[in-house]
Length: 215
Ligand SMILES: [Zn+2]
Ligand SMILES: [Zn+2]
Image (cartoon, rainbow, N blue to C red; front, side, top):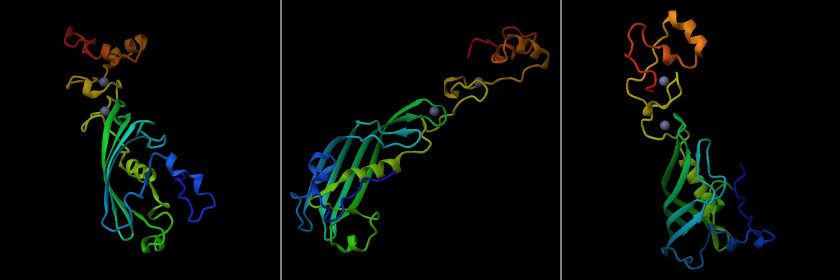
């Protein structure tokens, strides 16, 4: 998965990326370079398409809320604050749909061109100030993707699915079981379809002990 390409210093066409057209781009001219100056930044931006892992992700276009503080430091611009993103997916245990909001804390330095941090870091080790701008999208994407659970669950203690009938255990009575089929009834069960073993699970001779329609 190629990361968004940071423009090379001295790239031939500075307009190629057009920071003004990228809603995730932040103009630093107001903040200035004086160490210690600070700026609050609140934005709600549409999520790009690829913020997801296998079972859960941010719907494309969903509102990502940024509440950030930008601080000018010697080496670059320190960005800190909170990011809220809506996520949708399915439970890894019972496959129920999940809707949630991830609340993530962020703190990252965007290094100035020519700073020691920039000079001593590999290309992909540090985020960089690009001219008068920083692009928040790669930072927030990394934060979100790393924050997404690989095995999301609908509730903390979701019990998953019944291995015998495939229904959600949390929707079934606590005593839900599938009794071993009495071998004497096996032939009958086969005749009427083995997919409904419940119908024949009651011990013979105890009518009404178990209502087969109950679950
Ligand atoms: Zn579940
Ligand atoms: Zn079951």
